[in-house]
Image (cartoon, rainbow, N blue to C red; front, side, top):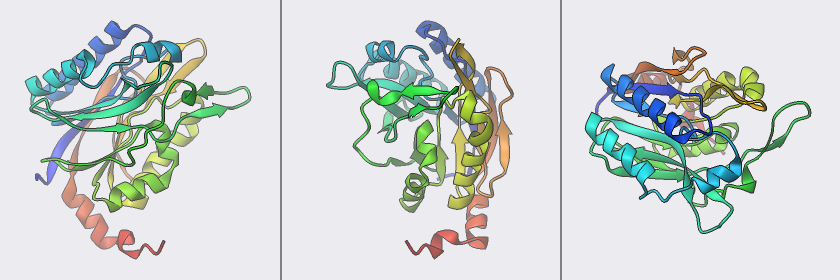
Length: 270
């Protein structure tokens, strides 16, 4: 395993136009890889933001053309590629899985994680969303993936509000926590960076968090500010308010240093 690598977070502005979304994502992945990124992470639902019912209609098995096309891209570029999430077909007609997929530099499907915590909220004069109406919650537990770069712990968006999931990932060996998201503008302006930095600090782990940005429709907008955070809680890379990407060198020696100097993981009592 290497001791450091370059990671990139890709920030998009998803719409209902799947070909447009996928082209933008592919172009940005290529640009990030050309800049030296060895691990590139796309946001949750990078391929589609719109009607929840249409998302279900867009669902495919992980062996389908959406994932396999991106697997061919990962192989072509020789990178680890995180598909933040895709709509994975389930056995139900009206619901799918919201699934994060990690692809290897040989194009292999290294791991998949089905979102555990579903975003069901109704804030007066704010966000209203009922993810469970069209998404089946994952039942496979956590997902920790050893690779030649690092050991990754997978999560998706709303999982961020459940710190016990991240401590479980780290206790199982995760060094880098991935949080691909479509985090809303309403909550993101106050909570996005605070929660991401907290997950990094309390777990002395790297956090890699690609997000959507901007207005998706008249009633939905995402906060953006995709970022990479080190184990001390310092934001070392952040996207501006636009479609694009940001890169940072992820140094596992820094993580080990922080864990020696602040060994909170060794002091757990619960």
